[in-house]
View 1 (cartoon, one colour):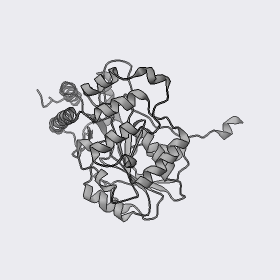
View 2: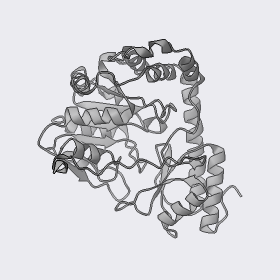
View 3: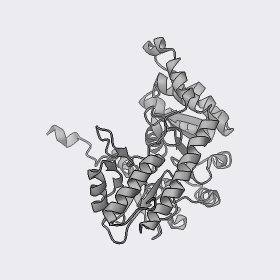
View 4: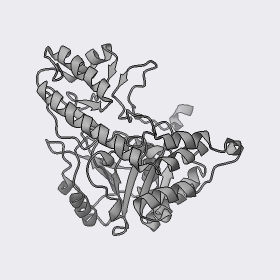
Length: 354
């Protein structure tokens, strides 16, 4: 009988984390190591203070992030990866009775949080080309979540469209999830001073190579961030640990390295996109650190399994509309050469590099 009181949800399924060395292109991690400044800061950290609780306000990190983006720390929130930040946003901002809206093909954690917190939600179908039809979102809603660039499709919408959308829906909180914005597109951070209902969520897991430290952050009006902090301090005051606070602050200081690895990933993405097209794959141009591809002559699940046999891991989603697609993270040049060669063998064709 005790199970009658259990909350039952279908959990989010993360990309597989194999316990051996493989070519891992299934979780959109950065293929390059963190900045040397991060490594040095972690080595020099005051670990004797681990006996103490970390700063619950995360003030130094918030100040460092705020300075970088030219806003105030009062407009900045940090958490344990963008998943934690988004979870707090759902809990804080979506307490109404109307459904929260988000696309039918997007980050699959959104509907999980809605289920966990008992939030009514409704999925709005993407267009056939996987673009978000912003005009399809009704005015009566309990909030809206837009991932830009969208995951897993990689489609990015220009800032002008995002601003028009936020302006149109001033009756509810709009969350713009920008986990991949550094790889393509223009951030909506510059809009938070104009629209009090806008929250912009970012992560250091992708473009700053800190997935292992779990650092996410959000921007919004002082009032919106205040509501977010009220929920955070009602759940867990000490969300960020010392290494994460130290390492993330150092990452924000190394702009040269940040731009270097961004450029390398984007350049590799461009080359690999051409090679994938030469093998017959079809896909929209990606604004992220992955490509979302389909092949008209070969089943995606079969390609997925044959790559896995070769210790090359990509992501396959067994969901309606995208069952015949694969999401392939951009790895190092060496990893992508191996991928293209393997795909050529699976398809019975020669890769573009041969």
